[in-house]
Length: 382
Image (cartoon, rainbow, N blue to C red; front, side, top):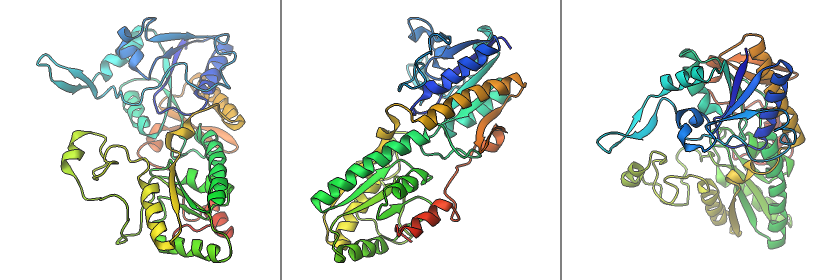
């Protein structure tokens, strides 16, 4: 092992530079050279887009003050899948082509012995396929929703949680002042960790998560009880993937499918209205409108969404990022490949990618956080 590469292949999370710093410092101790691939794998697939080339030499001196900073010095790739790269053919038509073989050849041509990608749950499947084609790789899991399987704590979650708690506390104060019910939507399409843990931290009145289909009549009853006891305000935290029980109507936008709108974008949700492409805000709007009708109290919906991904990392994520980066280097030094570094307290372990892909780490019904929420009197909608 002489030369390794690192890239960021998922959505932005706070403190990506901490993982890069941990990788570079650990590799430097072994005498290895480290290069960064810009914008996921775009630096190798489209080097002509970058004036200085698609690779960036990474040294301890360059990263000396980067572990605590926000941003990502290598950029991110949220769209480019090397197995489905969009390009214009000779007939001036857009088509998708498989450039994975070309990518692996370019990696070999640059004399890169292994790649450490910092990726979310969706990109793990891409890395697994590349590994089966011969790519030597160790992945670092990132997710502000903490939904990567087989790891207890994904990098970036703690920073997002801390910011969400701060914003929810501000919403609580505003709701108390205005005597309204604040309905705040946070990230969590498939897993409710962020909504649940943030809601517990601020003692929200209700937390709605994807794992528990909600009955808004029960949530409304809880809010009315507190209103009758003399408290005119409230706070409801909603994960973006939270859904009502089967058969219950969600009062919001029209939800009839609009096949024309859905066909215009590959990112369409399949539902009509202004959220046909980007669903952010849909859950908060629907819950706020129906709660207002059920409680006869003024509500206002707010969406944190991608805002929780900004800013510097917390101390926990700085340490975790450095540890994940150093752990990935250690895995390569032990001649491991096709694995993901997983935090399973109190250890960092190396889990085969086959065990981590196509799964979502959801909140189990027996979760300690579920028990805590119920003990605090937080309504979960069931």
